[in-house]
Image (cartoon, rainbow, N blue to C red; front, side, top):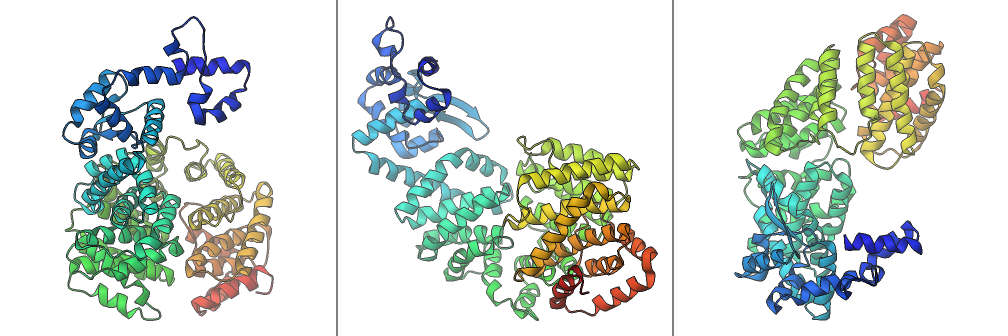
Length: 600
């Protein structure tokens, strides 16, 4: 209350933004006050100093040391840092209101008000105790990281997840200190726990930064035997979480993984390490190393290899083979009691089934994934199981259940998410269209598309964001084309055409881009059919060969597009299907470039 009163008094001479800027040094700003109050209440510094002077030296030393924890701390952490008298000291500090005590899902935690922490940190610096305090802080952080380095692979990860979440604001600055001190064991331990935490949150940008910052030092780290598995966990979690979309960020982590002493694949961690370590040898055209791992008589090794194979075959544009590998993954790893594996395995199977428009199969796998979510404590459903159920129900032709799961997904979603989220609007649009509410559905699709275009440039450099933005706009254009209502999306059609031209003019990146090209080409083809464009049937045929992201149904149904193309010109469509079927994968991009430029 005093700080608020002192800050409010500054409004006479400073604007609120100016006060906010100066709060970095709150003790300099919040001086003064009414002259008729005791001196000890006239400045924030004096208030804290008065309480400080009531403490004995041992309690002051405890405050100086524990102020190195910006995120509060547990009694266990205090004992590790302060010694056996820690709880008596914490009781004294709490009695003086210099610590607050709260019962949390992770246990009882102690926290200093930020003003008290800053005051104590300043006293620590004056006493020359900085190095010693940070050293004790890192000792605690290293022990914590070693204890929980493999929590992701346990059968009951929820309790560990809550402990790590509670300590996140301590672990991040501890990692900065460890990097600055070239402290390999602590860097490895903290990288392992934070990579696992952020992968469960799907926080890929933070993961990418973590991998980039810790990759170089860990690639030069030669761990003592006690820290080999800790370093292995750090490299595995960074590599596995980011390899598909952010590969360049994990090159050094992969180097670390390959330099560590080999170990038999008798644990989930070691099996993943063995497969990831062999990735550089998994070369086309036959992928002999991958096929050998998939054929292993060691179930963990074979199951993890098949999981990698699902992405390799998708990369090779062979979705049926990817689906077969995903089924073998789930079967091989079923005996492993790990909820993350269960959720990810069934979700991956469902994702591939949705691509092949096998809505019933996707629905079954998503329900199994949903059953495992409570064991993760994933109230926000970061992996999107409920959203997948929306899409599966739409493919099954059940808009009522799709609406139920959409409500569930919205309730479980990020509380900070905007109510006009484009993905949710797309789901609502498809539910309306499935019920025959055409104008409502088209209006929702336009709103979804507006949300994407207002968010910024189409090509952000984020491989997941770009894919999503193109999918939203393509589905919106396709929905309007089916309804014969191109006028409201004329600008979007032009934007997609220009965007596809830009993509096809750039150097080729990955075969994983082909379905993105196919999705945009599908939208342009459907718009062309509605406008009477003679080349539209060829666009539909080539889009089908490229593959289309068909999440949103009924709009993106392959059967619906095929029937529209055949109705427009059955012979031309059949000829185009035959022509593009004969093209190798490498020729599909050039065919798309020729078609979009008017040469095809």
